[in-house]
Image (cartoon, protein in one colour):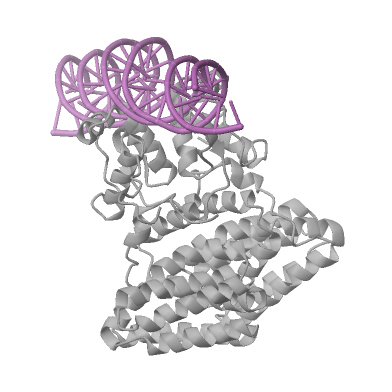
Length: 256
Length: 256
DNA sequence: AACAGCGCTATTGTCATACAATATAACCGA
DNA sequence: TCGGTTATATTGTATGACAATAGCGCTGTT
């Protein structure tokens, strides 16, 4: 086997070759976001395949968030929406049976970073939105489901305030899967007073631009989270459960 | 508009409906990884569409890493390979023009966490592999390209040693895009002695299970990285450049 | 009974073609 | 100039066909 003359050549199906060809032109900048792709017929002719084949290639690109319906019904190149990454990561996490502990470990360093950066970069608009979120949180301390939702939103808002898109990409799916677990904690050990206090403290730190305090309270908040899980008898080593909300609407996400 | 009686109903194309239908059955566990999908003809009949439509749906799922060629040429359900997530994130980062600073910020907290966890969980095998990587690194301190590659590999190995799959998912694309920048630094301010020293120190800490030292040196390593960029006149606010290596082979990745 | 070789079959990959649905553009009449 | 109408471009979907081939089972040999 070692002195073989020919390496096994990869017979990729035509739809994959077509997909790769277009994909590469997008990633190297030849086809910039916004550009309309040629009609399927033209593409088929240019690539030397037929329309069904081109369409299969398009479905791959569409699913990767690299193209989407644009003007004149045509496919347009686009920078992948955040929700594409989120969905991919979400599915990987669930299907690999990744545990809450693994998510928690990562989030427990990312979120304090988010808080710290947010204190330095937060806008008036986001201060206001977090204030609204806090009010909402205060109103539903006893409702596990609503509280979990508000919790996810709070952390999302803080992350947005951090003004770091890499952070946004990396943390969103983790947060969406991790925080809902807090709902169970609430159900078992009572209302989320500690959660609310932590959120409040973080909020005030952000408002006053106090990066260290924001960081430290977020950190404390995470230690608390873990402690809450333990008190509630939750096993952090359980596999993460799919988030039904996020499950339904891939590619209907918010702003890039 | 506010007192509208009907909400705009979404006329999704059949191929999307078919895709969603199958996708949901995968995510809710009805179709477990390993399961063979029915032949395209059967699927078409069951879903009440035709084969080309089914095939378009499959391409979407395939691109999401949820199915792949299995036994008997049929499509089999599969947990998404890590490279699917990596590719998605990679493309999003590049096409959104995310900056090195944003990557660096996130990595500068994730990697120290990886180092810390690695010290607690590293296996003999990975100790060995990192040792080999160090030797390789020592041999190419003056070759920017090879050094950058070895650097990416070093951090990947440390992350693997951390035994946290969420961390692995979140950091891989960031590392693959960030560390190659060090190549440029080397080119401009000379060989990577400091890099090598940091890697060595981290390695020894891992070997001896010294989590704090591993953490701290990784941290220092990242501060150094930034400083190196500044000395080399690199603007961290530049948009990240696509990593040509990773660009070519989606879905040819390594182990899940 | 084990096994090598061979044809068969199930299944995918690809093509050609056709037609319906519809958003957009072009046009036209007031 | 503008509102409405027709035309056009383009996608969405169906039908049917055929080539390629991986894997199965059969058969005959040892």
